Structures are given as C-alpha cells and as structure tokens.
Length: 531
Image (tube, helix red, strand yellow):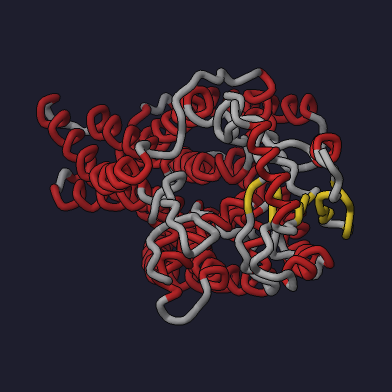
C-alpha cells in the first residue's frame, strides 16, 4: 500500500514539476546560445535575403530582395513569414539582424519545451520527456540551425505543433482541433515551401488513421488541406501577379545522382554515430545495433506474447505513424524538388532538420511503448538507457566545437574575418556613385550597406540552362566599369555559385588591373587600353 501511495505521489510531482524543469532547462540552453552568438547570429546568403526583405518591408518598400531601395524586386524564392517576423521585431527599433538572433533564441527554448511536452502528453514519462528536451538543446543539427538566421527554427515549431494537434484531433475528433492543426500547418507552410510535405502528411494521416467512415475522413482531409494551404496560395497569387511565377523556380528535369543519395545516407548515419569514423564503420555499427535491438525485442515479445495494441497504446501508435508519414512525405518532396525545380538544394543538417526532429520524437515515443508494457526486464531497460546516453554524449563534441567557433570569431558573414576585412573596409569607404560588380552583392550590401551588381552568370541560377546573353552581359559590365570608373570585387570564399565565372575566367576575358587583395578576395579595375 505504501509503495502504491509513493508511486502516486511521484506521478503527481512529475506532472507539476515537468513544465518547470523543461522551462528552466530551456532557459539555460537559450542563455548559452545568447553567449555563444556574442558576435551576432550566423549569416549566410539565405539569411541576407530574409534580412534585406525585412528591412525593405520596414522602410515601406514591401517584401522585396532588392539591394537598392529605389527599385522593387519582390521576394518570391521564399515564403513571407520569417521575414515578416523579423520586420515585426524591427518595429520596436531593433535591426532585423539582431532581431533574428533573439527570435532564434526564443524558438530554441520553445522547441525544446514543445518536444518535451509532446512526449509527456503521449508517453506520460517524465524521464523520456526530459531526455527529449535535452536532445533538442544538445544535438548539433538543432544547435546549428538555431545559431543561424534561417527560417528552420520557426518551421520546426509549427511542424511539431501541427503534428501534435493533428494526433489529438485524430484521437478525439473535435472540429476545433482540426482547425487549430490546420492553422499551425498553414503557418509552417508560410515559413518554408517544404511545408507542402506537412500538408500532404496531414491529409494522409487524417484519412488513414481516423476511425470514421471513409466519406467523413475524406471530407476532413479536404478541409485540412484547404485551410492549411489557403494562406500560401494567396502568397503564390501575389508572386504570379508581380513576376509571372509562383515560387521563382523553373520546371525542368534534374534526376538526383548516386552521390546525392549517398550524401543523404551519410548524413543520416552521422546523426546516429556523429563520431569521425568512416562510412563503412558507421554503417556496420548502425546495422549491428539495429539487429541487436530487433533480436531482443522479438525474443522478448514472443516470450511474453504481447499484442501490438498493448505494446503501443493507440495514441502513441497514431503519433508514431503520423511522424513516419511525415518523414516519408518530406523525403519525397525533397527528391521531387531537386529533380524538377531546384537542382542546387543541398543535403545538409539544415534541410533535413525537420526529419531529424521527427525521427527523435518517433524513436522516443516508440521506446515509451516498449517501456510501458508490463515490467520490461532490467537488461532491456539498461540497453535502451545506455544507447540513449551514448547518442546524447556523441552529439556533444560537435555541438561544443560549433559553439566555440561561434563564441570565438562568429559564424558566416557575422564572423570577425568578414567584419574586419580590409577589402570590406575599402569598399565601405568608396564613393557611393561608383558601380560595383561582384560575385557577392548580398554580402557587400549586408556588410557595407551599399548596392552592387551581380557578375553575369554562365548558367541561369536554379536551372541547368545556359545564359544565352552571357558574353554580351560581360561586355556591358566591362564597358560600365571602364566608363564609370567602377570596380570588380571578387570574393573568393563564395564558392557555391557555380553558375558564375571564376576569377581566373574573368582575368582571361577582361583587362583587369589588381588594386587590392586580402584573405577575403580581390578588387580590380579595367585597364584603360584600346580594344
């Protein structure tokens, strides 16, 4: 009797103490992120587009990506929510660069709390919920995306919230839950175009997992799809009116290579075993662990003759299945996007971060199903706990290295290398009327505040199509630099724009005269020679 009474006390204590523990833990993690980003939030080319759009919106020029306030180039390559949030913070006098830092800090804590609370609602396990939040705060992929001015932190929050509400709706069938889930997914879709995967997964989940007639399920799935897609549909109409295209992407066919698929496999295995070991070793260890767990669980279940609905309660089973549907949907959307719209999509932690979080919640939820059945043997509990601790500890070295880099010199264009560059300082003191051509106009605008022109591209960005006007555009650039006493600034650390000519190719084509060179790049003028 005393033992039962003690368990009841512990259960009640866990119920009320978990939110406080998760909040405290998340605040500590958020403070660590604040300290590590003392030079500012990390900045990449995508970050610049978000920030420029937010600044233009604040200045009354709408969501546009032009580096010249006198012109209007509507933002269409990305959905509007993240830039709009940055502009909203800017209303209170904070520049969007600094606003992005504090927005990410907020969502770093919010996402950790949300994962913990979702796990607690479905598993009723204090320790699994706490462990889920710890993984969100300590895993390298999550820390990385929250320390950069990217839209993924916001997208993750609405993805988790939408899935959570949708599972509750599938279980309880209350209409307001369907509307709430649709609203959360709509906000995620307004953050990233990849949110279409969430819409597809939600519609499939409502139809496949709901315990209603097929007619009712079909109607509910259509309601969900309509509500969650409607706001972004308006955005696409706006884009079409301004530019003639919905998303600034051209339809084509660019089938993924084996190297592309192998990169996805390498990254997934790096999530499992982040240590610096070879692909074959990582794959071998991963397969051995999978076989070991499968063998133990199979033997254990067969001996006990447990039914599936005992092993996985209905609510956990629905969550696991919906997460699985989302992961599959996201993977298919990613492959389709790469194959038909944007062959330059990289396979990295940023792009696959929603899969990483969904995978974490799925594994922990499935684990809770095993731990909740009867009384698992001590060896099973010890094995699962040991694997969890090993996974968490294996993440910490990469996370610590990343935070150390951020604290020491900053990340991306926010680093001291860029801010203290002699080249950047030289450009900053140039006459604002002199035209500047460069392979990094976004970088120069961010660091100096002055507009610049992109060097003509050999291939049109986002496609494999050649630029038929390339040579005439090169000659026009040459003429303007010469007649208007302009300069060519080539930033050698910008290596991902493979559609642009290299510095050597420009030197061969143009009579360039070097006037400045440092670690970040070179500045040239056109030789005044007769041609």
